[in-house]
Amino acid sequence: MKRFCSLSVAVLATAVLSACGGGSGSVAGSTTSYAVGTAWENLYLGGYSWALQGTTTWQPSGAAPTYYDTTASLRLKTMPDAEFKGNGIRGHVLNSLLTIAIPGYTPTTSTNDLYLDANLAYMGSVNEETGYCEIVSPAAHPVPASAYIGSSGVLEQFTMYENCNAGAAVLATGNMHWSVEQQAGQVFFCLNTNTFYADSSDSEKDCTAIDPWGTIGSTANVTQTSTSSAGLWSMSLTTP
Image (cartoon, rainbow, N blue to C red; front, top):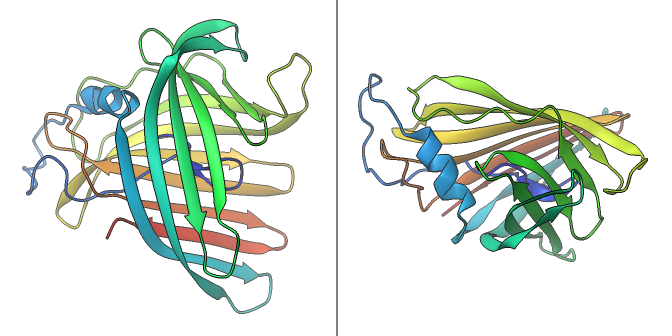
């Protein structure tokens, strides 16, 4: 779910989900192999939506934190194939729409088009609200066909530009890796993203519950933090 939840640039995109309640109600032993390649393919085929709730925390440097009740909705939808302007390659397109609401504040919406090549390797994304363009280089590593609990691996390195035009200003750099984790008796396929700006850094963890066959779960939670000289912002959301 990479970048489905990213708030600082795209509001999760990914970016997005640490879930429970996947295709299996109980966890198989640690020697069980999980079809993470199938989970990746299922995720990027779209057709998923989650309702999330939790807490957003803002802690200014040297001050006490403030907590905000938060609700969110995330929808993934497959779009017609199109050219990714970041590299000129025609690819598959997954549209993510995330809306986050805090009582007393105007809801925040982020819409991202994520581009994948013919082998479903992630090439980059464009945020529809800002035009920010994320380009993977070198080419993304493939997700393995299967993995065990505790396994992890590098997926990609990326650069975020002000737009997809040649010569656009660089806004950030980052990396992403995958992992298979067990939390509260459920197995998750997680996408972990780190983004580095000139004056701040973000980390995001998006997981989804899976069973050994790579079935995507129906519940989820998302965590993200953003650190700068001004303070620490964090968000933790889960499906009810």
